[in-house]
Length: 435
Image (cartoon, rainbow, N blue to C red; front, top):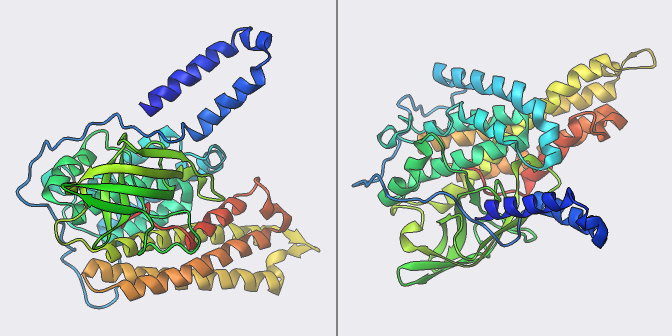
């Protein structure tokens, strides 16, 4: 197994480091470099899973969640009492855990294992699995998922991505998975140790279009053969289950790929921002999966799959932009220059006002699109408008936040430089998330 192999390799190197052999041979520096590389980027082209997936819960038909019964035709900004309680719990977790661990997680380029365990106590995964499969979900609510994503990102966007990636896979399996797929994979998410799972859509290509992936899936009898490369895949090195977007003879589709499949490789994919999400590059060199592992039971909508992921990224950007705004307002009121707070300067005050206006516009367009998705109405246009605005204004909010702090905004001592780097991902990232 990949993680076991890494452990054995690092253990052997550490044992050698404690002896005088490396010094006598003059290779201590080389050994240290190897140890650093292994611990930071994992073994290239190796991916395995310790979990064995079996269909232990045969279903006659797939389980689907219905939209909330209070669906209205009008755009309603009110949230339910249950959603309010969920937000309070998530906001407390984001404030006390994610915010405090944001800088170390970014430096380590991965979320701490303890953080994932604490996040699981929120029960987010259970609320993505229907009650009939052991979960706690009674209805499907993209609005709730959007609010959770926004609140988690207010603490730290990178860690939020790592937390939401497995939940996103469970959401997709609940919405579109066949009876076989749900009985084999979805039931695992309702257990005490849900699998580490992620969605792979983005590819390392200029102007990447998720509707035209270069990764291919060729039908070979009762199997598909996947070839291609995916980039910026959250939790790639740890994932036990992947949802991979690929082009088939009849258009784009999504395939369930288990970690450890032959030909599946994972390597580091160092990024400018959202580093705590553990992004990696996934290579598929002739990976063979059963035809039954193609996501969907005849009702799969690939465009909606992509659009819901896009709206999840918009929600993350809104949460991070809100964190930026909440930080620069007291800073501008407390920071003095020439005997008065810098907020008294119109250039600074107008800059912060623009940030607030743009943030409200981002939130309204995103909420509108997600509300239509929850109501079962067409939301393709609204999702496109939301992403178009968010990818532009979120980066502007990040830039202006750094500008308000001046030289301080460019240092690690203040979180705005990390938020700025995280917000840059909004315009280029696809996949990994699903409302």
